[in-house]
Length: 317
Length: 281
Image (cartoon, rainbow over the protein chains, first blue to last red):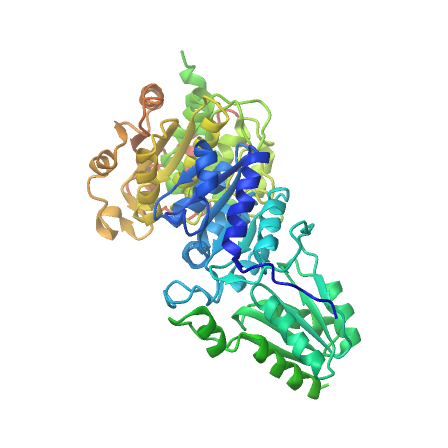
């Protein structure tokens, strides 16, 4: 088994902020817009370095998306920043018409995604955003797993022409992917090789999947662990190659099981290679207040839940 | 000095284009289109500084964004007759596989269109973005926008109106088509807009009226005055007082023709009031 080391817990939003800072220095067309959450999105450094390219929009997310769309006309590459809830559900029609349908090169960067926002509760958490964004034609959907990957993804999406939804979070989590990784949009990352089960995870659940694979290995079960940072376009090939070998799959995400990564994987499998699948995801519910750890435990979004799902899915083979 | 005879001829021809487009497919929005015909003709032929070749970025030229996308028939006709695409293509309005979708879009690559619109209330925000990009590019040109009056009921407009004034977006001229009508009736009956001028002024805009919004001379003089007001720290709003359905007697002063096409007989009557000038497509 490959060994992964947590080099020190960090929040993925800081990966975004540091990526944006780096981008600001190397790409003069990058502009940043924020709806009164500069500190929460870690956009302060970009703002300090490039005040002329930073736009404080105020608490007006619809206007922010429209302005971002307009700024692409003239060659700018706008990165918008606010919480995932206010980046998607609140402005769905603005993204749909002014960004996606209009084919604008806007990068919608969304922090505090999922349930691990924690104590603020369900009004600020969102478990539907991946579904909302992946349904939009032409939208690329990325959900990174740690600080290093979020930073790499932030830098990479500036070089991609087209609308992108980049999803990350608030809590400090294990930082284990390489600092010098080459982030390739749409390319799955194989983290472990095994033969009994495929575990496909995204976002904060990737580290949990690795912990689960270690526990399973101790019990004689070997797992393919795949990090899907890009939910759309999905790396169908990597998924099929693995499931053809293992014969079953567990998907894991901090999102509703309706509309999330799991459903995308199920579509690929049902079309090309039907196989038993178990879903680690929230079960069509809103979140609630609590610490991130308490919430991940209550809603079954951690390593032990993955271990149980693996045992269940192997029995169904 | 503008060649008013040529512009008047173009106005009449554009009216014919609008009527024939919506009649052919028995759908579309003639009322608002006719009400803004003189404005579009003046804007594209007398007011905007435009490059010959269309580019999405529009660097080094004035830009126009249509927020109330349902008046696409007038937009398409004026774009075609300004040379953005062949006038014959007006024949494809709202047909399958056409670049002339029911509401304007970039999706099929129609030259002259830089943003999709139709879902209302988004155009001012987009225009602010384009205006900010012009400032970053040190491009001194103007961004023009047209929105409907009923459209101001959408909340996003007021986010945008607040932002533009608060951030001195002064290379922007927003024209409001003040025709007092919307689908369900008069705006004063559907949802009263109150004093639109006072509202824009209270938000910090430089506001002016063009009372004769269907008079080419008044429009050109008024919009030139509006352009002079740009670059002075405030965004500029023009309240264009128009008559919906202007130029076709039975379509005027009513919301009935907001989104309804004329039948064969009605088309004939309407066209007879606007005889061929430049030639039909």
